[in-house]
Image (cartoon, rainbow, N blue to C red; front, side, top):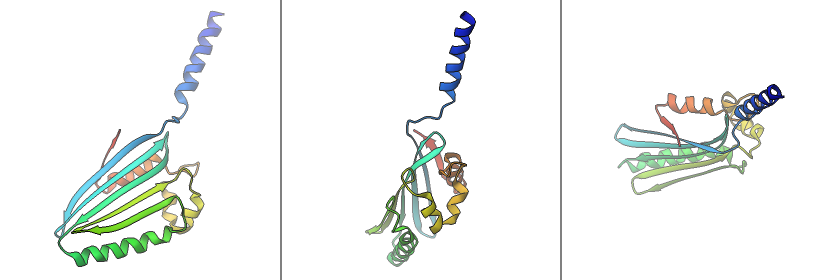
Length: 153
């Protein structure tokens, strides 16, 4: 009987220890750089459950005295993001305030039809795991390869 209880206890520990976390966690990746007289800062908030990314919120800022350059960047970013206008879970905003352009995105992968996103941007497939969810480790690698420092909170 004791042996059965010990085995049951070990089995429960194994099962509860190996299940994926259902609690949403957060990682923040940041990067700053100066290039051609422009200060750039990038902030990526990645929300995830287990190995599946649920949401990504980004804030990218470019500061320069070259207003024409900011307007060109704004046009380019709006053109790029406009491809995602029909996906409700993909929200973006691009604005210029003084000498700073701010681009923000709020992407909810948890409720998004990932196949719709793939139709627009097939490169997203590189980030998916076997369950067709954005993989936490893969997206972390992408941010770190661009020079960002990532920390879980």
